[in-house]
Amino acid sequence: MDNDRVLIVGGGVIGLSIGWKLARAGKGVVVFDRDRAGGAASWASAGMLSPLAEVRFEEEPLLRLGLKSLAMYPDFVAELEADTGQAVGYRKDGVLLVGVSQDDLADLEFRYRFQKELGLEVAWLNGAEARAREPHLGGQVSAAVWCPGDHQVDNRLLVAALATGLEKAGGTLKEGASVDELVMEGNRVRGVRVGEEVYEGEMVVLSAGCWSGRLPGLPDEIRPPVRPVKGQIIRLQMTDAVRPHTIVWYNRWASSVSVYLAPKDGGHLVVGATSEEMGFDTELTAGGMFELLRAAWEVLPGVYDLPIVETLAGLRPGSRDDAPILGTTAIDGLIMATGHYRKGILLTPMTAHYISELILTGEVSEVIRPFGLERFL
Ligand code: GLY
Image (cartoon, rainbow, N blue to C red; front, side):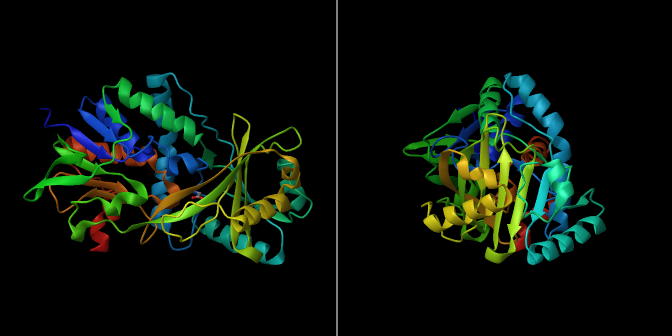
């Protein structure tokens, strides 16, 4: 029995990337996914790596963490692509935050001043300058903030490459394997139970996204406070009539909807996303689709004619303060890597690096220390 292996509960980008890093370091790893690896939030995502565009007033430590992870992306991608021979669609093309109404502009200007105060490299554009950068923008767009440092990746290609990387490096991926219980021995983990079978391991990583707080056997006092935050998404097929070069992002003040349009190398335009507190519900709604399409059409009118390829809803794992939960717990051998909320793809390289480092060396880096579960206890 391989008792010194690491068992990872949840095979989204977080669990897969930690597994890949550990396997390449020679560690025994098994990643369990209840369904298809990367088939939940990682699949529904738009793959945006956009800490500049997404900065929020109360979240400077999270911004710094996002910038750190963004800086790790080029090496992370190069390593993964070299290991697997699979491209992940990493693009450095930037985000254009746009506004239409007076309210939008006031909000945009307020954010822009905050971005500048933080020392971020962003530029204010008037409507004509914005259209010069992105000619498919509609005439209603009256101003924009250009965030050249924001990037994107193809989240679905990333999932595929991480699964390949994990297995090529000697790790095991078990799909359709729902972990039914965390198995403990006193105050330390002994393994996990899947159906009738108990898998023993030295450590267990909990990276099960919005399901992380529901793992049976987890002592109540360390249940991570994560909840599902629903996001409805539409994938359109781009044509020459509408093929933005960059991600266009519109916070539509009048309906409190925030819509982004992310062009992917394969030809899809990902239009997302609603943000709804609906528990584990993943129904698509007419209202959700309407809000997204109306906002998308206002800023890129050509989307009106684009074929719809796919509609789906994903569940973001939101923590109580919207920041991830990373590091050790009061249970020996139990590590958390969950609660990445809107930033799971962005924070993947950072999480994989520091959580695998923690597992291999026992050291909790200063980078992740402020994001431990203790902050909620
Ligand atoms: N990161 C974008 C979203 O969660 O919708």
